[in-house]
Image (tube, rainbow, N blue to C red; front, side, top):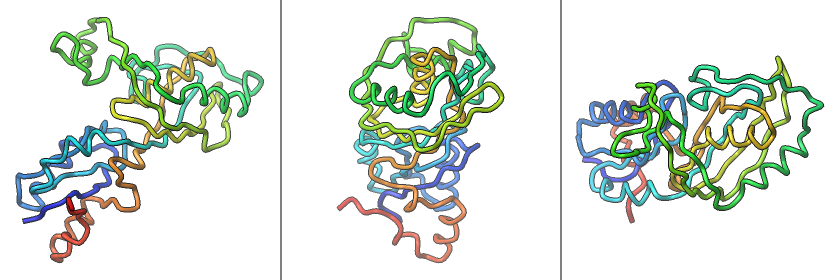
Length: 235
């Protein structure tokens, strides 16, 4: 029986529930739980609690997270990310802003800020998840929420092409932060529609990408009886 926290690398296309389901089959135990949902199109660190570690899953979930995201200026979508339908477009050109403008703008997002969660999210309003309203083409007032942006910065050059501008950011934040909403809010401050076109979680609960294992690696280590060495104990 395994006990400890296992940082899993969740690949794009899998839900967090898929990861837990597959791990239960591989490890032949039901006492497994993840520490916070990652959207299917998001890759990265998903700490999984196994055995007696499941009792600390809420604690791990409340710890900070870090992401690398691509912000795309010039087009907004229904979901605020690359999976949604186009809502609005507006041509962007290199004369509109430069990297210094972006860097100053990103500084303004540091600290406690307010976000309005996306319609396509699991936030509940009146006992119903927002994405359920969205799928029924219903609109509902979404409450503003305070989130903590501990650090944010640009980590790539600005790439102007096909009437859009793309650049990467790294964000260290607290629980409940929507990076896709951050991307659209960056666009609003620039005066352009925007969306998040790619997202990777590089850290969660103190666990980082380099310590994370794919499901295939976990399966191999389990078959070799050496997986326990990769688990982080509670002590």
